[in-house]
Length: 373
Image (tube, rainbow, N blue to C red; front, side, top):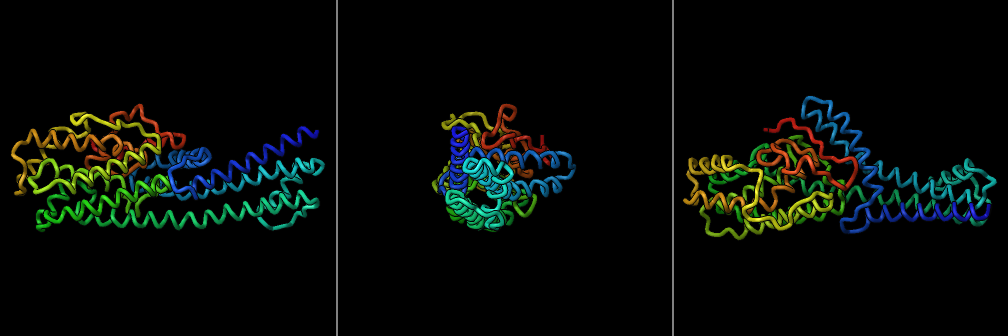
């Protein structure tokens, strides 16, 4: 019996330590660190909402359903921490006093973790355990209280820039509209300022979306906006600007593209999305030559100064786009982003083989509503 008590007590200690390190990795550690518990809990919540979202016919209804995935997933994760911590100390309470039975151990653990104190702890070791689990319970709730403002602060900063993009690139955002609007109002020479601002935006989402991975699944207030489609529109605009337009310098646009694809790759890497880290400059992309030619001709028709060698301009555009093509489309599938040209109107090249590893089941079974074939 003594051996059984020691084993059960040790199991309780291990479980409590695991729950604590899961909470620290999720909330405190300032880097992208995966938590198995978080993946399972969040994946279960996402799968549950997938069932309902898949049955809807209107995209707006689907978006409203999926908007609950991230908030409910966060709360479910905290609930899982509390339940497992309660279970861990229940094991320890039973090991200390097996005569009280499992019911008594649960009674004492629940009383202690909630700090209600309706079950007395008689022995000294029980009192030590009661104080410890009460402290852990308060710690987990405190972490939640500090966690939520951090997430919503990052969400607010992300969405402010996404919302401003509609004024510049239309709804849904697209690269051609972005360039045409700036040309019509005579602001093409101010695009360098835009590239610098979006470079900072990409750097921030890389940090926030790997430190707080649930943030990637927080949907925009407007169902037709998304951080993924906004980022894709900016990268495509910068790629067209650097490859197709006759400009004094392409350096700021090139730096913005590099910041963008590095950010998207780091986020994709965190979620287990495969990609080629060193793609060939003439590698395959999801944009066809006909699609590019349509944009080229539209720019010419509007009077923008474009490079005369259209073939070379196309090759340069491919060289920019290939750096972010796969990760952009895969992230759009992962978060079920709304329709946007050149982003969520097509599937990733490896769509049928792709599985994100951050949580199970895979979140990539996205709706194809409002996407062009």
